Image (cartoon, rainbow, N blue to C red; front, top):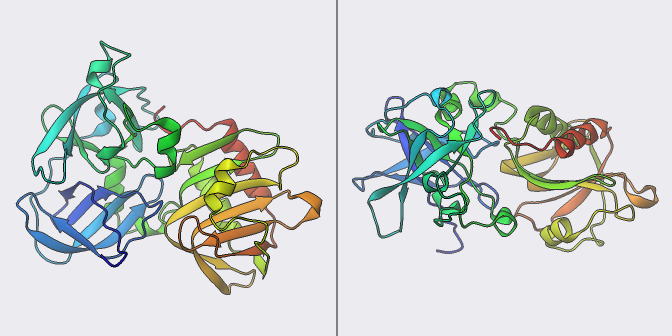
Length: 339
């Protein structure tokens, strides 16, 4: 109540039983208080330990108590068409986990440590079938036939549902191998620890796209965005922008007459915006970066603390060539991991 957002997702206990792996869609959610409810309805206070912004995979630490741990498998041993089960709580009032059978598809061992894709098992014999599975599976547990955990269902960004459709769509499965990397003491120092969670990129003279973090060359892209956000100058006017930047980003067709190229991204945790000498200018849940603008207007960063409400803008004083190159690579080769 009182405006607080309640987010529900399934997860599994790992390690010594005091740590929980789950998946959170951070597009419109910023971590606050969290409570873990066990299948026996015991409740535990928990804190955030690490977040993989590529996937939304999140490691939680129980304040006290332990839970029975899951039996974990090795997702790299999977093959195309292997049958798996997604264990999902069907309704808020139904406490029983119920499985949906799925099959591995488009499996690529080169990227299997991060994620892989599945389809409803019945689609193998009925490719045109549609059993209605979709985005409701956030954080649901994926096991093999023997019950070993092979992964967790990744998030489906809210803004992508109208594009790809929720019905009949299963988001990529986060490999349990990559999710377990969050147990490393150095996990919070990785480039993806608070990097871009998902983004939209539009470049003049090129293609446009909406992406989650499951893209090739994620680290160069995240590094380039971070570099731009540490080289900001004076505040700029946002009078030419709607208050809700979402309509500007997704309704604005990029053409030769558009006001430059644009990348928009949100962060799992608020990102700090700096000037060139290291002073913190603001904190941002999301940012939009524009370059090659018309009439020789300076490159700028538009930001806000609530996705995607405009809170202000700063001039970019540094070189944006690394970001331009990273975006060009993304747009020319947008294939997600595991495809």
